[in-house]
Length: 219
Image (cartoon, rainbow, N blue to C red; front, side):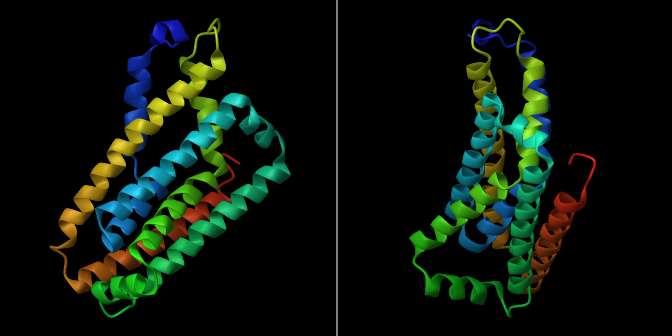
């Protein structure tokens, strides 16, 4: 099947993709924070949001949109700054949660002002926007995936999207596991430890925002 699609060295693609997905980043940090605040379902829907954003990037790269974006320095920079601003916003939100009296009171404050469905919807949108507003994800697909597609593939676009789906699927499995582990460990943490982790997570989000906005090596 994969040979008919024009894929070569699929084992290397899977190995490299798995290692990349296991590398902690904004998606992992978001799923941990959502799972700690709202349980496994919140972490799972945040994961689905990141997956949708990832597939949008993969499809855009397959269609050449990512290449056009890379060619326009102005458009790339605008999207990069918007993505960095959103990560910074999430970081500030986590820092605010970290200074609250207890993790339970923070969760009650969130759930008392919105129904459970609203909490899950917000988790999904955060996952989607965290991934979708990162222009470098599209450039990653543009640089990584073509290395495993034969030059004579019958439909390079379809092959590209297929490999993007495979890469995204392995990431989803990992993030769902992260969500489950987070929920399992949540009950063993004291209020002080939870507040400390929220503060650390917020600081890491701010660091990711800074790197996204000012890292010129991939811009």
